[in-house]
Image (cartoon, rainbow, N blue to C red; front, side, top):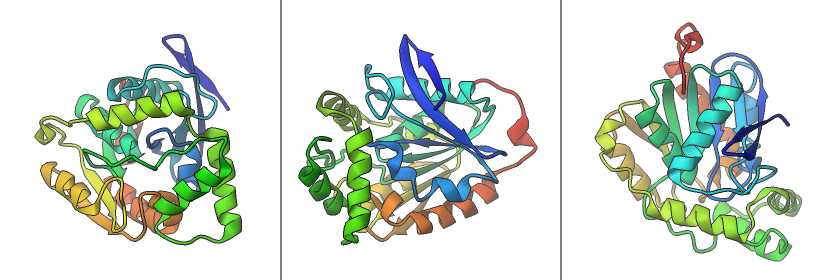
Length: 258
């Protein structure tokens, strides 16, 4: 995987495909496994960018806040050659994507999945070295009872890539402290997706946030907070339609800085 650095920290990322850039912004302390069902469908007609936040996957541990994650995202996008980008964030990553849209002219649209303020993060994270705890946390937030082999695969991904406890605590604190003051300033088109059984970011809270955005739209999905992987096909279909409607392939090639 290629790397870039910011403030002396190594950040791992991966790019694939060609065309307008779609960058994924991960959830609080969770690895890029969350995008396993969505990235493949977007790669090809789009250049997809997936990266590991501080202390996640192979990225170095570092300070974690909405501001630092936004700046890490900007660094990755510059390194990947993106002049403009659509952002797809999950949970905390959706907050980061919306803040980037507020501050960066080159963010063309945002899809935020399971993103709301005042989240309930009691059991989303589990120790990466405890397979039983990882399985329980995963099952609780899928909103469905997965086949054993599929659950085992996710547990293995989480064990390899999710943040350790110290970094996970920082991710939790960053999301719990998020306010998104003055959402009317976020005029970038934004699609917010909520899940009917999401205990972390309840669907009605996601819908309320969408209603606060000048160009916000809301879409509801089945499942729990981990619906981007559990309902990946449905999420990918919605994302394709959204990106098609909000992509101008000529303007996507204009120069600019994040």
